[in-house]
Image 1 (cartoon, rainbow, N blue to C red):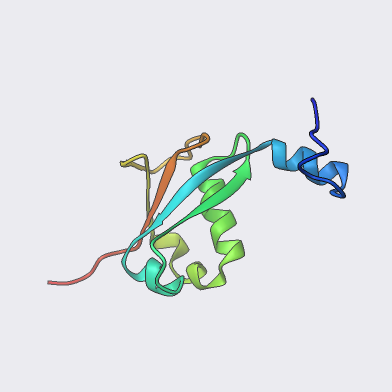
Image 2: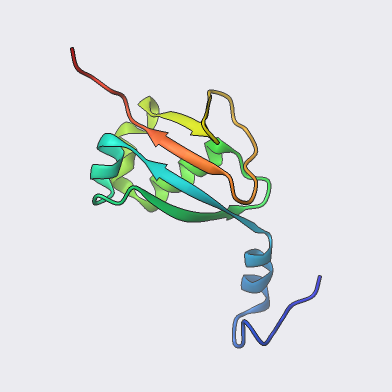
Length: 104
């Protein structure tokens, strides 16, 4: 593995290696999830290479405690397909966090 020191001068080697073993996905937030996150509807998230949709949800609820209240009831879609079992995410994938919808 090559490390380009010109881009990461001063960064510890462990940190550089960890960054290189990550993939970047786009997280899309809807309805109440968007409100809990302050109104933003999408952002990028770097996760460990080999991470699954379940790992991503766990990472999001760890980073953003406000999402924890709906963790067990959200629906997850990966690249526009609903997923119920953990699916491995890849660089550039889109992960949608869809909270329960109520109404009548």
